[in-house]
Amino acid sequence: MFKYLPVLLLLMAACSDEPADTSAETVSYNLDSSRISVSGVSSGAYMAGQVHLSHSAIFNGAAIVAGGPYYCAMGELARGLGPCMKGGDLDLPVLVEYARAAAAAGKIDALSNLNNDRVWIFHGALDSIVHQDDSIAAADFYTGLVSEDAVTLVTDVPVVHGMATLASGPPCDTFGAPFLNACDYDTAGEILKTLHGDLHGRTSGGGELLMIEQPGFDAAEMLQQAYLYVPASCAGGATCGVHVALHGCAQSSAYVGDAFAAGAGFNEWADANALLILYPQVASSKIAPMNPNGCWDWWGYTGEDYATRDGAQIKVIKATLDAIAGQTL
Image (cartoon, rainbow, N blue to C red; front, side):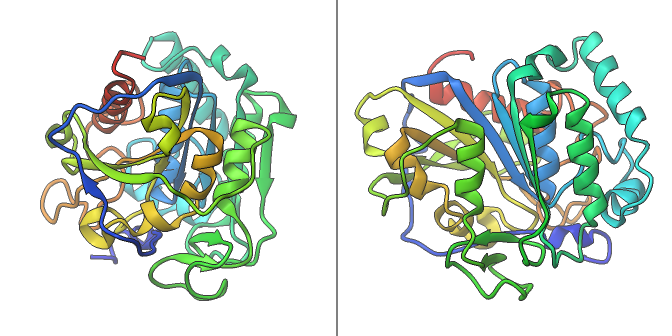
């Protein structure tokens, strides 16, 4: 299967206790609508850009780890497997013009919402799966829409295609499961500090990793449940922000259980900083649509509107956030 989608190898993982199953409950929290951000790895990185631009009135920033610019594949898998992974001419002005046209048509939020947003982009120096040019293109794409000093590009961490952590996973230069690499580098922390400003330091946790429903999952090639990390303060009614963390290919709960949700490093920052962490989950398919490793749709397998507010998976993410908030954001 991987011969079709080498990008499908992009994933993360770790281990923890089984999360509580709260799927039968209606769980809502007191959300701070000014502190909502999104990040993603690999296929999740592309989806993070799509979510950010589609709902820039909601999200205050985005992080892209091992991915490229918004609408890179232009609805074509061949382009996704070509320049969007291998580098080369991505026709960046065309991608920017698509975003402007989509905003003008009301398919994504007004681009003016991006003015005060922060963007963090990461490419591992040893990454041989996605070319560094693609991450640079993502930075260039955003630089044309937000102030240049609001975009951070990191390319000097010696890690393969995966997510660098402080201590979880195999060494930095080892590509393999769980695709979390122990590099003495806290990717999750850098993301959250960039997107949410000054934060209190990491803690050992203390919150709870739950499973919650993903409304409309069955019409979007997604799994029924997402993971949600809930600090005790948020469960007790405190006002909390939320960060949406999108896994890579072959990294949904169907493949690795709660490994990414428990081990990527976001939860350690959540408790001390009143942040819910939402981990949406994608399904896999060995028939049409061909998505054998559960990648996010960044080339159009759910329909031509995949990169807009009408995209099936973007709608599920938005509906899940609304359910967490107990209202329409």
